[in-house]
Amino acid sequence: MLDLSVTESATTRTAAGAKTAAAPIDAAERMRHALALAARRGHRTAALLGAGRHTLRVLSALYDPPLRIAGFIDDRAEPGAHVCGWRVVRPAEAAALEATALILNSDACEVALWARRGEFETMGMEVFRLYPELDCTSGGNAAPGQRQPGAALTASPAAIRQYWQSRGDAGAGEENSPRTYLRRVGWSALLADAIARRGVPLDAAILEPGCNVGRNLAYLMYCGYRNLHGIDVNPLVGRAMRDFFPELATCVTLTTGAVEDVLTGFADRSFDVVFTLATLMCIAPDAEGVFDEMARVCRRLLCTLEFEGRDGPRHFGRDYARVFGRRGWREVESLAFRRAGADLTNLFELEPDYTLRVFER
Image (cartoon, one colour):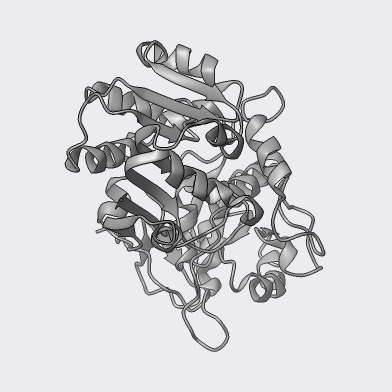
């Protein structure tokens, strides 16, 4: 029988034994890079060192990887243990996995795990790390855009804007390109249900800042809403929307530009509903005037489905109940996704530390 839970492990505890905070929001992106790098170096099988909470963040990178995932190595693995279908063994049994690449699967304890790499290298494994910025002993396998020792902890607003403008360009890769936003329709269903439950009429004016290819707006269109508006900084989004959602492209008003710039051009209370999905998390601290603009242009209902965990290089966790409460909006509904196992987090394909919040004036 497979154990589909992800539990805390000794390998990924702090030295004092305390539970670690949620892993960085870009953990899956880093894992994908490490697996791709291992594959480019000729490895065909990889194992992960650590089977703890960090695994929740990287699960999406472990399905359809560029090489075979043989299993996990963990100091406290019990006989016959599995995590999400993968075998978990103790370090002394690591050779049984027949892996030639080993990925360190922890942020809180990566430095300590990196110091142990010698015991696995003697088994013929090349060790890859995800967070080389944690010290100055990096093996050089940092992904593009990852923080390096001595570099700034977060990107500037201009750098973040440039990143999102370039998604889908030739040479920029598929990461966060418009095509990738066709997946995870469960997120769209969750947002549409939250809007419909509040009695929003079908002729309501609805705005999505950071709409990307328009998957959420398309879902609302299929639910009967037609007065739809979107903002996105990526100039390729309009073409992608016409390709993937041609009917939506005929009934949505799409404005290309940075959210913080476009919102200033709308009159007060222009929209009945303003909602976001994983957009506000990309707003840098010195661009938070966008929250004032959202509160200003919205007449009836604000809805956020956003990351509220620990900051990353291009992501900023916030408590949006506090953000919009300060701006005169009352929270009427919230749903946090933080648990492992067969719950709503997995049902809607959400990663931990996302929270759905609904506000009214």
